[in-house]
Length: 499
Image (cartoon, rainbow, N blue to C red; front, side):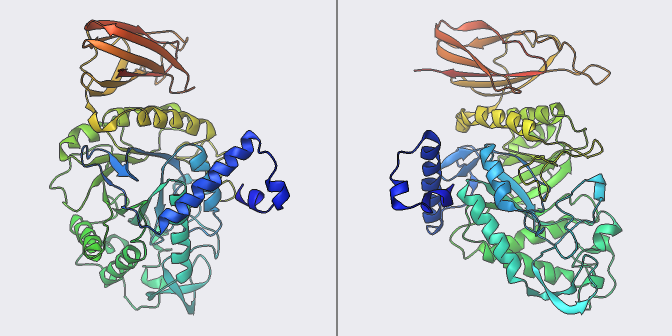
């Protein structure tokens, strides 16, 4: 759009713009404003000081929501990340997750078709420079862990720049355990793939403090390099390690890496948030590291991880989904329940993004370990718009506004600022066969106990985004019954006091 406008002759640019032309002009102005703000070094993403269960980003309370690719946007040279980021912005999202390049996967890992974390021959880019010694399994020469590859850092910083121009936050995941020998066989940290003479090293010892065979100094240097290079980006936070509860990663090592981040940033003007991946499902965080501001979980359904750790007053996130089939319902329900339980971050792992399909249109086989598709992203956008319409600062998990219990066959999650705003998500409970009963598009009635005043109630269909409004003018206080529009699987309700 930018090139199509500035590349025309002066006389052509003076022509009356169509509505689409005006939209293009606004996009150009927005990108120009973003480019100018880059030089001002905006404060980075932070916990909101008034409600640290949510973020503060560019002056606004923020919840981070996305359906993103499988973490290879930077390290896979075949991946067109500009097209991908354009797709995320068009879908209304503000987050993506990417791996640093300290970990890479072989083709076919975990039965993932067209895996972006599995670049083709000679298409893998990582922070370390190549040596002149041949023999790397993915093509090219081995690595020198004492030298950096300028091409990698150039691509990483341009990725962050392009994301920032589109209002997208990047989670940079620094490390990942080597689940199997097949991943370790491709790692630049494996002594067989570098020229640094580290000696024999088991993959399960790579992320320990006392059995790492000299890798700790290499990892520390990498973290310091990344943190130093990226200090000026506001749309960034660091995750220490993906799924450290596999592959021998120790807690002491994670604490050490968090310390390297904070010590490196100590003299910087701005400091970035640090995330720790705690568990699959749910767990209570024990002895939380004071340097960590985001506790991320995977496959966090039901959203018990939020309830167990809400008292920590930090963001609780669900930053990977999957292994529940390829249909949309399980992941849509996971997203709504997690955020309406008080979570502040949700990332669906979307396998429809591949190299060559950066618009998210890849049609994957039924054997894929998760979902994601354009229709699902439209549904997730409904959730993002629903959350954005709320005053996040005053909200806490609370469904006590529901009077007399839930309608039969339903469960609910909800947020409330008592007397001012309420957000409720209803979903039908599965039957024993795993199917959703009562799919005839029937209505349900929800009874709420509201204080005296005027309110605006809006039903929102999480599938279609269609809304139905119920003004409650001069409510005298007490119970009120709200009948929903017809739906088959789930429905949301937002109630806000009006002036």
